[in-house]
Length: 189
Image (cartoon, rainbow, N blue to C red; front, side, top):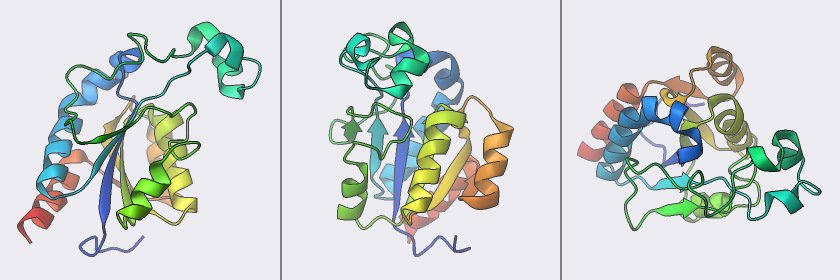
């Protein structure tokens, strides 16, 4: 990834900050919300994902992910667990990709087309689960030729192995405060 970020066209992706993941999402919520505010101030699009399955019992036959977790361990679309955390700062005009149904936020969603429409070349990744959805999406972004910034304290739960892997071969790992500083500088330019 290029050392300088000033020429990059960013988007902030907030992955699966849902009631189902409240125990790992709430500890990072204030950092993620503060970063969302900085992104908006800098004119950077904020995109949210919402993982779910319309019919987990039937999807068990066709989805490896649902088979892995079982129908009862999968998030049913429309349920309380599927809803985004009430404290998450989602503006009415921001995109929520509620069609996400696997770890990779690109797979079967509009994410790539949204990023390409906006000429985004750098994806900032936050949300949950660090070692599953966030890491898988970071790897997918990288192989699709996007620069990746992975927020170490804006992803949960903490996972040192993921942070080392991302930093070694897939993207830049920053804290939310470091990212906000860069975004606030972008907003002033």
